[in-house]
Length: 537
Image (cartoon, rainbow, N blue to C red; front, side):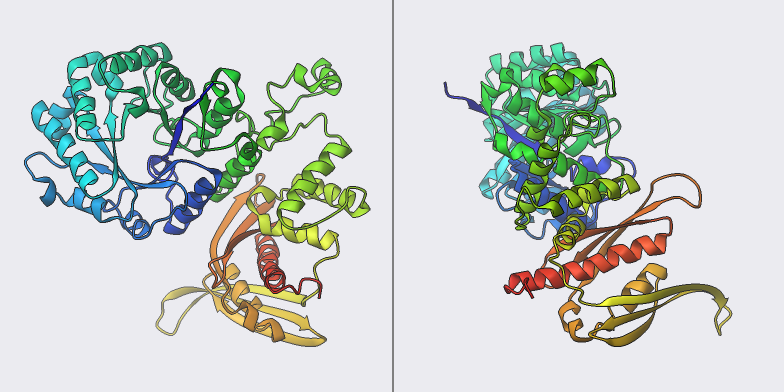
């Protein structure tokens, strides 16, 4: 039986950016786009070029290798030709593969928000889609408030969708913008749209989670005939969020009701990276992962002692709807030595680190990781630190240099002009090949001063780290009070464009930062040698 294709459209970088407290930098967007692209998402919507400087810069280059890179924007304004509309021009000038227009499909919004006639709105949809197609871009239209609009005036909502299709849009996306439509309504309206002449293979669904049913609404739309799903990583988004792709993807791939009928651009085997993707994204946002998130949460396959745990020990299927390892998660009650080793061996192999099952150092590494994670270390978002921890345990990291001591000072004082200033200074003493070196540096805050001082003079290794720079710094307080345990995540980059994350944990924020800074430098030195085949030195 031939399965139909479902296309996944990620709007994390556009709709997800409307989440309160989230403001992506260009670097953040690059990192997230890469994660999505590598995981196998079909469409990555990068934002709204021209709406803000970040998105404009982001669209100066194509940011995906496999996925369609999508620019979002409004249809042309009423009363202005498409060639003279600056918004449309910004979309066409971007490096996007596809353009997703947002169009009003509720006549109430056409009158109140746009202040034009229904016919003028239809003309704007047609002209905008035509312009995108003539520019060689794939065109799609998000019919905003479609379900509310259909319930108010079905003929006009359908006219908007038909105008987009007639002009050549690849996709018409039906949006539950207010998030209040119920699954049964979604199913009924989608069927009506298809019966009105718009093929399901050209229809998408964009659901918001205001009643907690965005995933259910997306699946209802698929069952009714749509073949594109829009959503975000971990369900972030405006108000209560968008449909959670991290929940939808495994449901579509693992549940027979969907897996037997449909296929994705993501293979079932790729699901093993799902938990890591979800948690790495949360770390990038500097927020704690949702422990009870479906499939990927720390508690998704956890059971307390009792009859459930007893049953799990005998047959995991008694209380698990899918095996946790299929989605890259783990069982918290039934963690056998063999299973734990298999997971670690797979992770080490992925990093090019070979170790035998019976190597006693593997047991040491497993115990060490568990101990450190209990202390607050989070290796899902700090791959470089985990890499170093594994290599150190296996005796594969030489002592390039030794830090004998460091000191940070922060002084608030008046300068010669009588202005109040806060000055940070750091002193670092290191030993390289028996030679003691000392560096002093001032910086914008103690961590910056420490970073500059540490990298100021590393003797014979100095030239190797000349292109190393710290690109991001995140702090999370793991418990309350001024004496709280602090986790620091640092992102570094070198001249080749490589980026890596390192982590430090301490009840002293400077010490935690120093741990992460040290790992960053050592990881750079180790990978340099690995690149030229000198890792054994």
